Image (spheres, protein in one colour):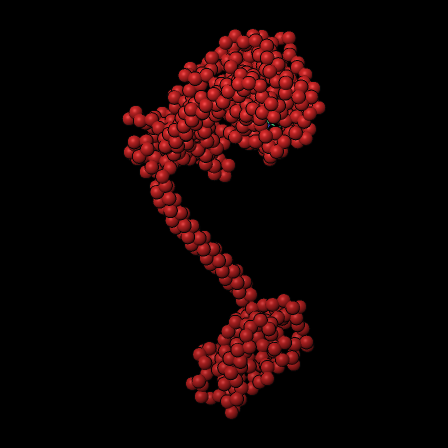
Length: 557
Ligand code: ADP
């Protein structure tokens, strides 16, 4: 039996408090009290005694139970057998320094049981000193605190994760701040940009209520910002298309908000804004939907006053019109004199002279055609041309055009077939305009088909009731229209490369005229083509006829 805390040192002044307390306590105890105390201690604490090197001399039951070693296994072993290796060496250096200098060491130690599991103990180690005050044994009393340590570790973990969450939240807040500042800067930049551009810009919400309007728009529309913001954009000014007031539901903004598709003004139509103070000016406008995550949140309208462009166009067309007019008189004179010369009015011509005069006549004819076409273009663009629908036998009209073309058909040895359906009624069309269309497509089919080719003209009715239309198809086996030329074929003065070298005759104005006439009178024109295989043009005119239009000039055929 080992006597605990039997300190041989007589002068106990430097014995730590716990030792003094226990010793003083022991003094007043009977042997029985002493035994009870020891037995209570043994139940509560892990008690061990080692020699000065730390070899275990005594271990109580609790020690055995917790360390999972048997008594024979543990006795004589150095205490370091229980070291977990999870604590810094400095802790043990401090421990040894304290106890070897005769003081009590107290601390928390993590130990490793025989089965490899770990446990924490609140450890007090007191040296038992020899007569020369040198520690010869150490008594260690330990209390199991694994549970407390687990809770502590759990709390630590929670505190760490809480700290991490707090940090993450702070980071998110930081990011949000940066984003918000960036958005504020971006908004300011966009507003400065929108305010400084010359085009009018109006933004609306999904209902068409004005949410933004720049200074240019306010000036052009004669509005104040207070009046504009919060009002339906369609109530701020009127829109006229070709001088007719456009219903609100047909405004670009209404159509864009309904369809979510960007729209722009049709350059062929004149769209004007009419302000509340009665000013009217032509505009070019674009409206785009504003979508956020696929949801429509509004629209942006940009517009420009195109009064000057329109004026320039008008002046240009007037100049072409005037110049063409002036050219017609000398051209007629050349025509007459060339005809008189070939007729022998100035005496018989030699075959060579005759050839030259014919060249003059043909060249002059080409010039007359060009001047007439230019005049037609300027009349179409100035809007001065007349559409005067009359009851017309379109089949007879088409036959006449083909008869006029016969010399050319014959010359090029074209196999020309005409197919006219029986059901074609007399139609309300402008015969003059219908002739221009037939002439253009028929002449092209013959002109752009190499000798020996085939052309089929087929006129019939398609559809019934209001949908019924007169369809003219003219198919040839000619040069075809190259892919890259297809979307330019109806533009002014355009001639595709593949025919320009083969057929020098041509103005590049025929199809432009035909399309302009058809679009302005309710019809349409389209084509399908394959290079070196042939082309089919298709013209559609409503069976109800052409829309009438007042004007000062007819077009030349
Ligand atoms: P052009 O006076 O040159 O015939 P058009 O406006 O009538 O002018 O036609 C424009 C261009 O379209 C032609 O120059 C030609 O390149 C092409 N084109 C028109 N019709 C045909 C056709 N039937 N076959 C091949 N190309 C055609």
